[in-house]
Length: 191
Image (cartoon, rainbow, N blue to C red; front, side, top):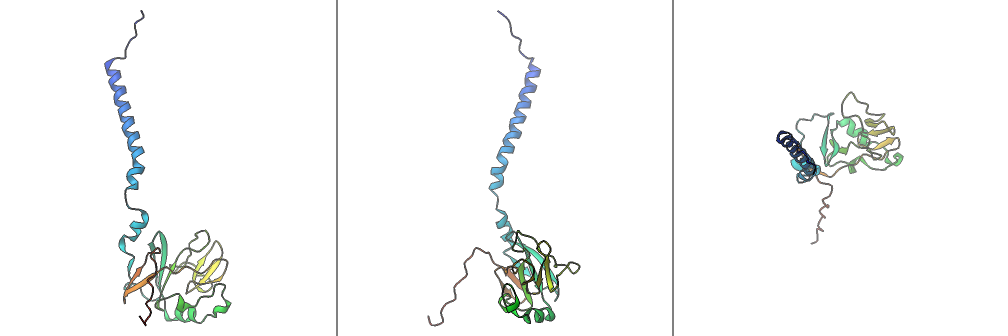
């Protein structure tokens, strides 16, 4: 009979330790997606602030970019000149006919999505040194779309910037509303 030689105890202990470490690391890597899925979704994290925006620090003419439901949202404190320019437009000449009054709850505050409708290209014009297009609003370079101070497409191929659901809590506080919440119907005054 031939005799087989077993590895020395030191070598066997080393191999056992290495294999245990590999199984432990592999188990952790396999469990990571499961553990990560137990946390809140990105949408819930976005909503953790309830979409409440303090407007008291924004002077007329300033714009701020916030993230809500994983989308960048522009909040613009419009000047009287910007409001007048937006309201003086003949909507019959616009590709997507929307009056400025229908896009705002208060004339001095405009709230629109910073993403154009086509392939998710972001508009520029939030900062004073960025291009605001030919109409003083925003500019989306991929489709060469120029938006006015109401977020309406005036030149180019994109649609008007989307107006998210929002409400004013008080004079200097705005709340962005979840897009999946149905609108509360207005009650008939005769009821």
